[in-house]
Each structure stands twice: as C-alpha cells, then as structure tokens.
Amino acid sequence: LLQLSGGKRRARTTSSSGTAAEGPVVRYGSRTIYTAGRPPWYDSHGQLKEPFVIGLSGGSASGKTTVARRIIEALDVQWVSLLSLDSFYKVLSPEQHKAASNNEYNFDHPDAFDFDLVAETLQRLKEGKNVEVPIYNFSTHSREKLKKTIYGANVVIFEGILAFCNTEAREAMDMKVFVDTDSDIRLARRLRRDISDRGREIDGVIKQYEKFVKPAYDHYIEPTMTFADIIVPRGGENNIGVNLIVNLVHQQLKKRGFKLRSKLKQAAHIGQPMPNTLHVLEPTQQIKGLHTFIRNRETNRDEFIFYSNRLMRLLIEFALSLMPHKVC
Image (cartoon, rainbow, N blue to C red; front, side, top):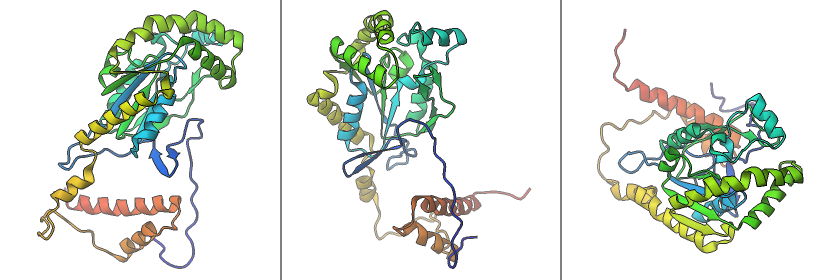
C-alpha cells in the first residue's frame, strides 16, 4: 500500500548498464536530447509515425561521428538515436581473434560486420520497437556481455564506414550522407585515435592501414559514394553541408506529422460533450496521493519512476476491466 503520511519509504537501489558507452542523455547548453529513444510516436489520427533515418558513411576517421553530433546539436529535436556500425562487428573465432591480436584481421571488410543484425535493428527502430545493440571492445576484439538498449526516436542516425554496403540496411535509410575527407587527414586522425584511445602501437596501426584500411576504402567504401544523396567535404568543418542536412530533415519531420500539438489543438472539440468511450479513473485517496508525489518538483528521479509505475499499473488494470470478457 502507498504510505501517504508518517515515516519514509525505504530507499530503493538503482542499477545502470555499467558500460563505457555514452549515456542516454546529451546536453547542448540549456537543451536536453534523449539518445536512448522514446516510445512509439503517433500522428493526430493515431497512425504510427516512422522515424527519419539518416545514414552516414565515409572513410575511417573521416569525421562521421563529428558530423552526426553536429546534426544532433543543430536539429533541436528532443528524441534522437545514434547508432554506430562499429557495434555490429561479428564475434571472432579463436583463429580470427589471434589474427586480430597480430593486426592480421581485416576489420574493414564487409564480411567483418553482421549486416543481418544491422538490417533487423534498423527495421525495429523504424517500427518504434526497442533494440539491444552489442557493445564492441576494440582492445579485446570482442563483444561485451552487456548491451545498449535503444528505443525509437524522431531521428535515427546510423554511421559507419560501410553503412551503404548492405542493400537492406540502405533501403531503411531516408537520407544517405557521405563524409568525404582527404586521405592524409584521415590517416593522421586514425593514428591519434588508435594509439591514444584504443591502446595500439604505431607500427601496428600503420601496417593495418596499408594492408587493410586503404584497400578497403578504395574497393568498398568510396564506390558507395554513388548511393549518397548528399556529399559533405571536410566533415564536421563544413557548416554549409551540416545546415543543408538539418533543413532537409526539419522539412521531412514536418511532413511526417511530428509537430503534433498544433494539430491536436485544431482538432479539439471545445464545449462539446465527451464521447461515451471516454472513461475516467475514480480519484481515490491512493490516486490523489500518487499525483501528489508525481507533480511535486522536489520528487527525485527514483521516486518519480516508482510512483509513476504504480499509477500506470492502476490505470492499466482499470482499462482491462472495461474489456469484454466472460467468466469461465
């Protein structure tokens, strides 16, 4: 039972993923963007609205992630999910793992990625369903036991060197952007990233670049530039390119009906009787008590979630009681 007065409810413990992956919230100044996603979105007619999926491709260290973050910052959309192809490396066999430890495994070949899982993940996100995304550890060349949970969003950004190589994944994209950066700049960035962030030796990085990275760009990545709707030279430094993408996305979101409040306001029948299908949950003392905690600005996050779950359970039980049924 809900304790309304006297004493305090025992504090509950919370848990988190405990992974090194970025958190579900990104803040730009006074704005908050939720990257873990939101529940399915519907238009004013109750129809499911698919998110707008942006595919970002380009060579290794071309600035794809920087462009993605700049798009997120400029979009001013509250719900954005960022998905990386790096999360979908296949699980290596013992022989492949040994080759990877000796810089002999080609991580830049299309066969290194689980594109079936990529296509399935993008499709589930478009349907507003949650997905469990693997977390790849570049130091151990293996997947972490824990996974990252992502939900649907207004905008889903999928970035990776071979993002356009798979037909099914490519067909799930509403906009395809290729980030084109000079090869010398990409090599310098890759050296800095792999040595400082991934703990690799400089000789191994250069060997891998000459043997795998550059040939993969020439044979697999650069040819996919023909699939791109927009090509962004110089990556995140190209303000004009980023602004063009943002403006086009805003136009598409407006067409898809994500600006819902104004439509609902126009459709409201003020002063007219409510339909007989509307049922109101009886405001019992328990319901009032739950509302008191939920509406109190000083209620912390843990308490807010707890009392919201209690209220939702009562609401669902009430709704189920209205369903047609018979005693067996």
